[in-house]
Every structure is written in structure tokens, then in C-alpha cells.
Image (cartoon, rainbow, N blue to C red; front, side, top):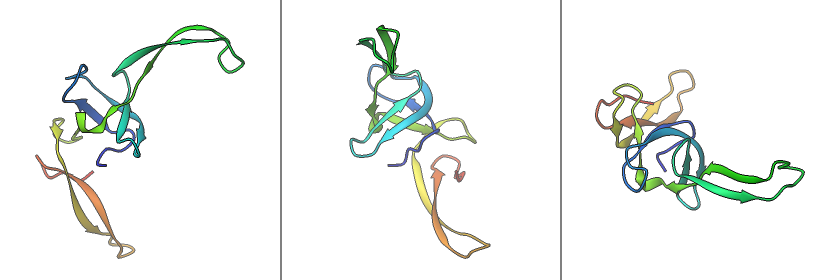
Length: 107
């Protein structure tokens, strides 16, 4: 999955098309993400010790990760994500970096 926590993403399909937000949580097994302020649902909750105020609570529901696109921090456009192998100069170890397909910026 190319999407990480705290990435800024935009929704490209579905009811929330065009909305943007920050990724709060990722469910890798289900290939779903929770985005701040997107796909708000209402839940009726009972009073408990954990939740002393009963009533209707609004919260974000997960949406499919295939319906979102990462926004590049440099060009501020939704972009497909590529990967490049980069060698660390201090330790000499190789690791993979994410790359914007529009401007080739690594992040």
C-alpha cells in the first residue's frame, strides 16, 4: 500500500469525491483508510464508563484505499506514487523511497 499515516490525500471516487484530508488510520488487511473529515457517519451510542455521554456521535468511517490519491507535498497535486531504491550515505544500506510521478520529488 502506497498510503501512509499522516499523508494528505484526496478522494477520487465515491460520495466524497473531491474532498481532501489527512490519513488517520490504515487497515492493511482490508485495504481501507480513515481520512480526517471524510465519510462521516452517525452512531447511536449507549452510556458507559468509557463514554458517559450517550447519544448520536459522528465519526469517520473507513473507505477503500483505491479511492484515494496521495497529494505531493512539493507540487500540491494528486499524484500516482512510484518507488526508487536509495542508498544511505552514512550506513551504506539501501531502502525504498516514495516518488511523485509528476515532479519526481522523493518523500
